[in-house]
Amino acid sequence: MSLNSTRPTMQSESNAQQLTRSVVVPVYDEAPSTVVSLVDDLSTKWQEVVVCADRPDPAMRETLDALSAEPDTVVSVSDSRRGKGGALTDGLDVTTADVVGYVDADGAIPVAELDRIYGAVERGDASVAVGSRDLEGDCRLSQTPIRQCLAKGYRSLARRVTHAPVEDFQCGAKAFRAEVWRQLSDRMSETGFAFDTELVAHVHQQGYEVEEVAIEWDDPGDSSVSPTRDAPDMLRSLYRIRKSVRGPSITHTDDDPLKVALVTSHPPSRGHLAEYGEELARAYGQRDDVDVTVLSRRSEDAPPVEFRRGYEVRRVWDRDSLDGARALLDELVAGDYDAVQFNIHMTYFGNENVHRFIGLVLPPLLSKVYGMTVLTTMHDLLEVVEEDMVDENIGVVEQFGARAATQLLLMGDASTVTSEEYLNIVTDRYYSPNVHHVPHGTFACADGGLPHIPDPFRVMVFGHLSPTKDIETVIEAFEQVKMSIPDAELVVAGDSHPGFPDHRETLEAEYGDRPGVEFLGYVEDDQMDDVWGNASAVVMPYRTCTGVSGVFQLAKSYGTAVVSSDVDGMRTSTVETGGDAAFYDPGDTTSLADTLINLWVDHERLQEIARANADAATTYTIGDTAERMVELMTKEVAA
Image (tube, rainbow, N blue to C red; front, side, top):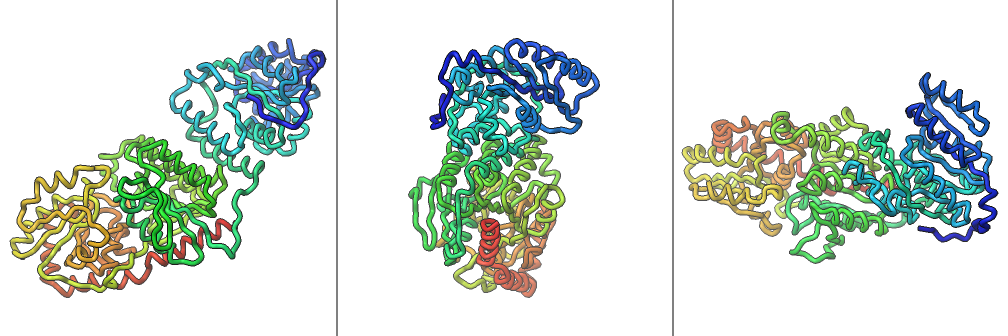
């Protein structure tokens, strides 16, 4: 594969016979015998071999001393860690030949293959030649699936960042005319493994012709590059490379509205913060200083593009879909957005762990690779799930993945969490230089959030139904309530959680014929006022709490009393975010029944909780949340 160029290349076959060669070998933690064998092989066709070793042990130092005595070998030793890029820079700077280059010291690339790469430059086929493990053959079959996946993903990202049509950016064998290095050396800044990609990026940006040479490659199997340790730094390096060769892609002036892409679920999609996303989009749409586009999940019940009052909805991605993640990435990169906000929780992009993780990588990817301003709003954390629930439902690998994903999310330009407790957790347990507490915000309601206690006593459970909501205990407790309050009613409002698609049907089949119990299913927007207006109290029977409850925010918006299980995190999720609630022992039917009966008997206490929630509804609204989000995004855009 060649890249077009206006720069001249050498054409004479006879000149190729007269050109001298230098090759640099970066050495770190290789076996002395491997280095000696490689240098001996190189010396047969290279007039100059430069060995750059970092932190050599005594055995390697002895080997280097012996090599330095050879007439055509130059040795550079550093007692500190220069990194691959730093060692190559030092080595290339001292080369004296017409054609220079480098090869990894691990012996994975045969010297005969390196000879072919140099030959492409010497014949005048191109000014730069790079080895490629991906043009043809099955070189990577020996790699683990995760390494193959990471290599493919990195190649795709590097091509997007550099615009260079190269298949293999990271192959450790390259050759180029000496004048190319003299032209580029001052531009090179990467000292680690990203040196290879940075070199290709600058070569392409300067218009040099490049030839990719398919090579045989023997995977050594002991790469010092760790996917978990080095992947974040590779992302950051791509961001630095992008800025170096392309500069910033978006400009924004104070006189223009801030163009925001809000990545969120949105009705008619249900769950996964769809209702919250809609309310936040409405709040943005009411502002003159924001031009917001919602990038939402595709839906069979809504068009791909829809114009709402004050904002546009573009349905471009799907859960549990690699193509969906790619479509979202393409939309964000192609769009003319000043900032991107991700409104997400940990299971946002799919039920499968691989899809969740890939989706959660998008915020740092856009920030560090594409240079976009990214704000991530996190609605849950693994650390606030009760330990017994974690041990029962979340394996060690999933816990590690969740924490790794959290760290990745925090690599965006700024992050927000919905409670002070979450802020403390993130600050204490993660590297989080720019995280802020921005409250959930209450929604505007038709009745103005006035407290009301309807008669008869109507208890409601609201929201998506799943095993983490203990509906069974509520229904059993309601049986006891009916014995004291015969005309009491229980309304279960909500459909099955997307992760448990048949849960409502299972519950309704078992409990739907109980006297006074009604299953409403999903509550549409135009039904919300009636459903909430007829509720005397809402029960939050959660077995675990992973975020500030949207149900509690609705209770505040409607001035409704709340009865909540007293699991870890629920007080933070409720009363500590403003408002009030009565608590019962989780899983205890008698405790819940007694709490409900006592509140109905003590109307003054029931009214007091409802009033506290109604008052809290005006303390921090979704409009206030939007205001704070705009402040953060504007600050990051201007940075």
